[in-house]
Image 1 (cartoon, rainbow, N blue to C red):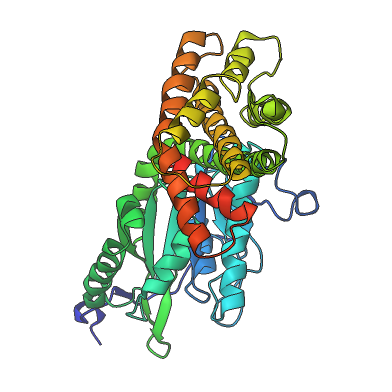
Image 2: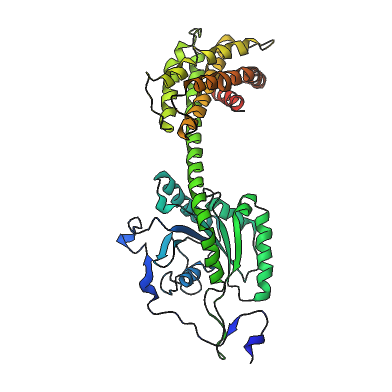
Length: 430
């Protein structure tokens, strides 16, 4: 039989040969130091996370890249990796992170997604450059001829922290050459429907990771193919991945600070509403001073801005609060609402909550700019302008909407303090 002219496959009449000493050049980081990888990972290398469904051939691919059959063990069929494992070779400037497969079933898929996200969050929480993800190899089975939107969604969920790192799709088990073009087109079409991932897709590469026997009697094999192209594309995009990873870590860190900060503001606004509902007159806003001080201190801690009652920065922000430009703006904005018919203590609560909300949002913006290095704590004139324009003037324009939303909610029934909180925050954060 003339195997050279058989259509659709790269055949060779030979046996697969793997160097006996290949394992000597491999570092299995999970087998060192009782499973700890921290002391053996070389931070100068890029981290590539290998993701895909169970049985797609991730372990076989990793073995082939490192030229070792013992590195990522496979059993009958394909091995199912139950935890993230890190592998590297001294000869390559990247390491591979093998992940749990996206097995059928919600719980299995959820566990696989959570494992990657946990790894990612810990790398950012601990500012651990050794655990950053710089590239994604997304493996799909070339023999299935199917790629569902659900698979793309799982990939997006698992790697959502790494929003801009390069993605290379590896089509494993690409034994048939005619089907390769179809599979590549299928991948591009699937990714086009997912904008965020589409922007990061750098290459789609069909792979035969190891020699595949199709006729044992005649010793006819499909030989490995595509690995050189995969390694070339990987090397090409590693610099981009290193830069993207730093950006993604910074963006995620900032996003988390915003989430925590908004939570702190919400808690303080609720307390302010409660204070405003007391029968004590709200004339100069001094009742809110302790709340304001606690809010400012809490937000400064989140953004690592030094808090000192005596610093000009903190005093400028405090002076803009309930007893200053923000408080006066809130009162004047509420008085300007025509035909307002809200009980006095409720008006107090609306003003108190709105003042705290505006102060908090102004602080978040100021502290964030200082944290990012765009401004300094000594730029007091800028801080004053922010409090007068962004905080105070913004609040002035929203007081009418807050009062109107409250009146509408009141017409439908009883309004709780949490309802008032939602109304205030919705309008202040517009």
